[in-house]
Amino acid sequence: MSMTELKVSFPTEKLDALRFFMDKKQQTIEQELKDYLDKTYEKLVPAQVREYVESRMEQAPAQQPEPEQAPAARERPARQTRRQREQAAAELSPAPGALTEAEGPAEQESQGMTMSM
Image (cartoon, rainbow, N blue to C red; front, side, top):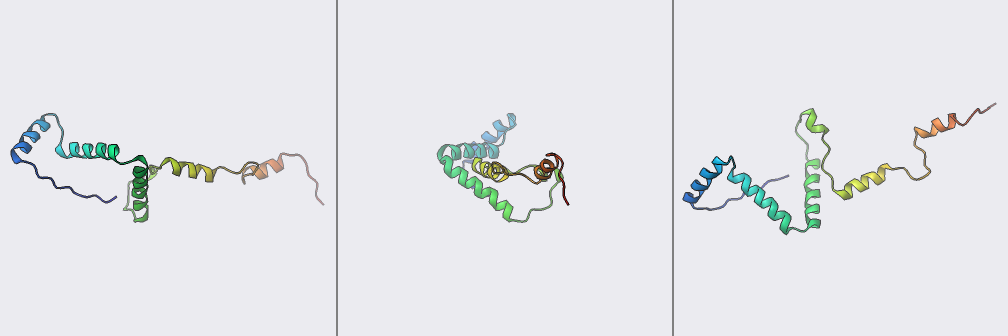
C-alpha cells in the first residue's frame, strides 16, 4: 500500500501547547490525526467504495515481490472481503454427489469382495 504524506499548517504556539498536553496523556498528534482521518473515511466513503479500495490495496502487495519476512508474519492469512471468502468457499466445496480422491478408493474397498479374472 502506498502512503501519502499530508502537510498541514498550524500556528506554532497552539501546536506547542497541544504537544505539551498530549505528552501528559501519552498521545501523539500524528496518531490522533490518523484516527480522525480513518473515522472520517469510514463516515463519508460509502461501504461499497471502501470494499473496492480495500480489495485494491490487498491486490497491490500481492503483485509486488515481498521482502523476506519472519515465519510468523507469513503464516497470517491476508484479510479478505466477504465476497472473496464466499468465492473461495464455493471453489473448495465439492459438487453434490461428487467424490473426492480420498473418498473414492475407500468407498470402493469397503463395499465388499470383488472377483476378477
